[in-house]
Image 1: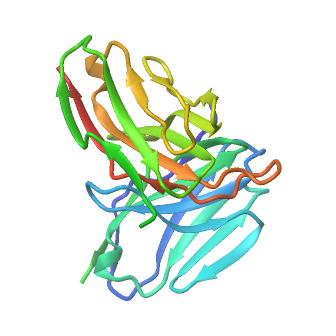
Image 2: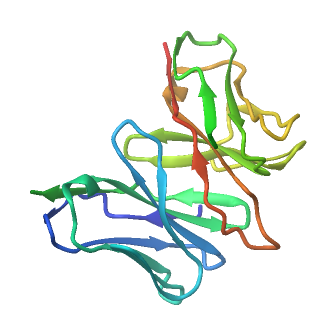
Length: 109
Length: 117
């Protein structure tokens, strides 16, 4: 069973701080890596994807990928209360997609 | 508006009564997929489809069927629902794989909350 693991949280950070979310995966053949945000009762929506080692930045969000360590992370700078949600890590291997169980983030005003 | 639609949004049914959850996308996407989401287990892939008449099993296909007769539609069929299929179901679509990689973003429908009594 190919696995994607995330700490379920909740991860609590004060407003304005950096939130760091982590994800590890077991399949070395994994090709693409996604971070989705899901508000309670809503469907997941994409924040970022990354498929090369290193960092990828988009506004307040930075995704980091280390394939040797089988590790992908998401940093959220200047965290806002509206960032409070569950963050899902997804990993693809050819056509199959495996999600982690998600990390709940709480940004405290 | 580009979107993935699912119907019904909420459904309460009884054990053994066949049901179909419809999924439709208007983005001309090749790839479509069904997931179920359960507390503590996250999103798990049930079936996916690369294109018309091409479907394959995900991680939890038991008790489900799918078909892909048209590019835009990907219905999920529960021939004989059981209480352990009570869950939140999401349909998703994406452009599809490029060569041997799969880098496309998935767009999710609003979800169908199914209760099987």
